[in-house]
Image (cartoon, rainbow, N blue to C red; front, top):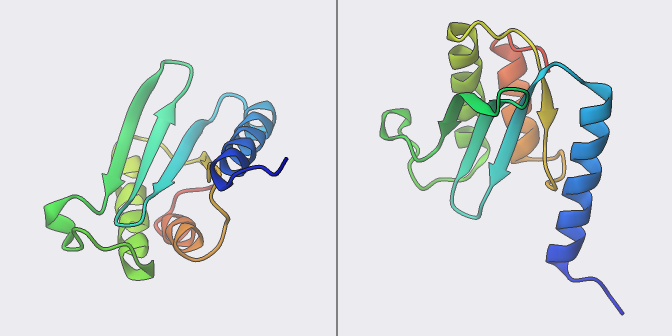
Length: 119
């Protein structure tokens, strides 16, 4: 019996997250979520169970509300890097979830790296 797209996505997300947890213990997690209309990212402290910083295309001051393209992802990546610096975070590991590291997700990661965040 064939797996559905959703089942394959969940398997990929769990595989990525579990491997990253083993390798990057003690670091904060930069988690990305991409929908058809928006993209959002959170900097999560798994030990304390708290979100340290977040950014999304839903924020009005970013000027890309409702857009989900590479330019919007680049702006969100730069914003999360800036907010991470304000929170005193210099490095984190990049949790792409079940999304492929291509296109918008890659643009977000590259913009965060250019903003000074080590991922």
